[in-house]
Length: 187
Image 1 (cartoon, rainbow, N blue to C red):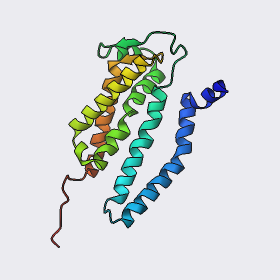
Image 2 (image 1 turned 90 degrees about the vertical axis):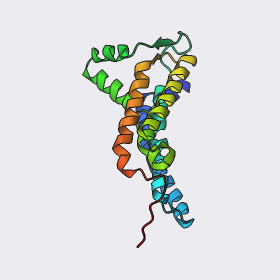
Image 3 (image 1 turned 90 degrees about the horizontal axis):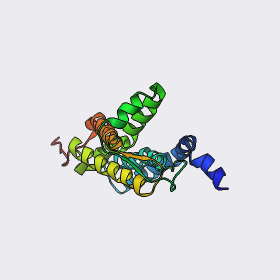
């Protein structure tokens, strides 16, 4: 039973499957939240609802994937790589598919948070704040991977790439950030 569960949900394909299955409920949740907020008079109902669902929908699958245990989870001690760019250089020598999967995957881990966070929360309407939040979250993930002995390498390169991805996503959404105080039109 456990092996069957792992084959469905404990692999990359399982995460993709869960993400596709979760899309209709996520869209329904956005619609319900936006309708309730609109009825309550919230002028930013859709913006808030899409941003909240986007943060969760775009981050949870990546968290699930990077917290999946390796083949020897619990049996081997955690490994740490604190020298910046060492793991990245190793990945670059592994072949183009590995580079794309590792680099792009790490850039996407907190991209949804970086993209939607400043849209939803005025306090995050700064690339510096997004970078600090993403770096903090990434450090927590790497520490958890080490502490839980998931048979993964806790690497400073992952922190750098996760943070860079959130920062780039924040820059991409900058045009939709709202000012901290509403601008009133006189006419």
